Image (tube, rainbow, N blue to C red):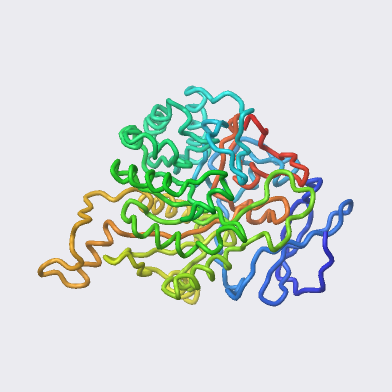
Length: 463
């Protein structure tokens, strides 16, 4: 708990007390270029947490949308958000990406882990239970993008069967959330998953140096990650690199990660940054120096690429709440440099100036599902040996040809913990987890814990 000088109040929202998880009124307050979430618990005092830091204007980072209720809800509104998740009738967005945790077991012991995976995990859900999870998603929102997660899903020997089951149920995009160890060690494993219907690999990738992997994952993994990427490429699987960014550990490698990823295009389809969140037991509030916000990642990316990837190219999301993420699209040129092909000014500000009707959450959801499935899957018919400009081909023809195979996305998502939880953001969440009971729960609510480690929804050791 800290005392803060008076600041300008920008807007009001709601949050929870990090200690007792009571729902509280909260405000977003501006101090210079920085924005804080401020809340006061009658029993535990005031809490201030940085949520936006740097020169990118907070007020301009906005993409309004009309809420759209889920097709079917599985809980009733009794205590209110975030206690009635299931989804409840108050939720304002359909499922875009659903995480199904197929195991609580893992072959790493990471210092940073959303799932709290370990040796005391419950038994893996059998195939008929996973079929039930798929059915619940279809009932709640219809077909969406699926991410098979854990724990580490590749510790299951029937992972291909789970993928085939999802395909049979009508899900066309299935992605594997993995540390890549088995993909690296078993040359034929990626091909077997591709044959079963896997679309993409969401590869934990915290940096290009072993020092970073040792600090966050307890093991030198740089060579392992590269072998996993190569094996996925041979199998025809698209790969997205997913760095968890921790201040003082890998903030200096943000630009290097993007440059590394581009060299593996078109196998690597993009980079998805995730600022560290503080789930679990933290009796003392994590210091603001131990957090990194979305605009800071963008400014570091611009700085470390010497301006070749400017922050102005990035836009807030069309699906989830505007404060949750950023994204931009690029073309990987023949020298592996990135050329921006969209900009925030082009896609949003100009449209807002034309007084266009505010889109619905469902519209953003449908666009995001389609784009993610297309961009994060491996392209078909790629002739990677083609020269920069073929005979009788002008620059436009070259761009159109290469855009079929060498597009690249850079995105980031800021997950929330008990200290910075914003219920307005939570109610617009489109990234959901299927609980063991079959409830559909927003990711940040599912992983939410008090400062003493008490979980609101997740049952530690059993999902």
